[in-house]
Amino acid sequence: MATLELPIETYDGPVDPDWCPACGDFGVLKALKQAAGSLGIRPDDMLVVSGIGCSSNLPGFIHAYGVHGLHGRAVPLATGAHLANTDLTVVITGGDGDGYGIGLGHMLHAMRRNLNLTYVVMNNQVYGLTTGQASPTTGLEVVTKSTPRGNPELPLNPLAMALAAGCGYVARGFSGDVAQMAGLIAGGMRHRGFALVDVFSPCVTYNHLNTYPYFRERVYKLEEAGHDPADLAAAMRAAGESERLPTGLFYQVERPSYADREPALADGPPVKRPIKGNGDAFRSLIAAMC
Image 1 (cartoon, rainbow, N blue to C red):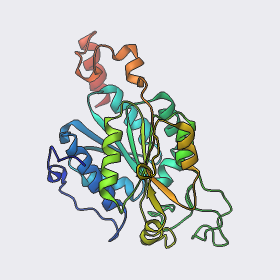
Image 2: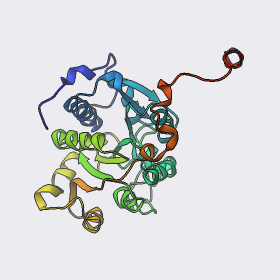
Image 3: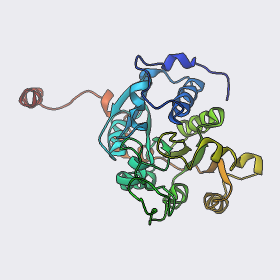
């Protein structure tokens, strides 16, 4: 990471995280603060949006604008905020259950549209908030509270899915390596378009398979293996690895974002434009809604 342009304390909120001790999400929160600081993003220039889940509580633990939304609906909420004020840096945070489950359809279309959003998914391979059920990324035949005889479903491969959907920035981190993760998140925030940062974030309470030691024995850094992030085929091969688990930037391609192509945004963020039309009618509408 580069020297912080803003100290990490800039983003300390008044509420302490309520995650379990040693939860992987602590590392993600620290990495997000470091990423924002390294880019010099002021708290009032950043919006953090989430859905439902342990990891989706993150907007309450960082000093920035934040919205704790509905289950699986973080992407459309963030989309509206982004298109209303394209000057904001909009980050989505959540878990595998929220993002890769009920919210998956929204995510895929946001990737296809290339909306300028950064989605950090804390992937713990279990539903933690509801105390340990199988999630979309839980391994085949893994025993959980909802699969006592073993999970009968194949796990979703989020990176391969993102690559196939045309996502322009695809990365993976590990919450045990905050420095690498902060760099990946900062890269996603700099990227003009949709960025997915999937994070191995161990649930120490309900997932005793995918633990910190489990990942430390298996992860390796793509940049140290000579990976070319411009090579889509190589990125897809890396996303398919299961014995060793690559982390780092899998793929990046630059193309115009949705906002760049939308004529209605050519005159700047709608939120900063004067309201035109019949003022009395507008005031009557507002009065009727209050």
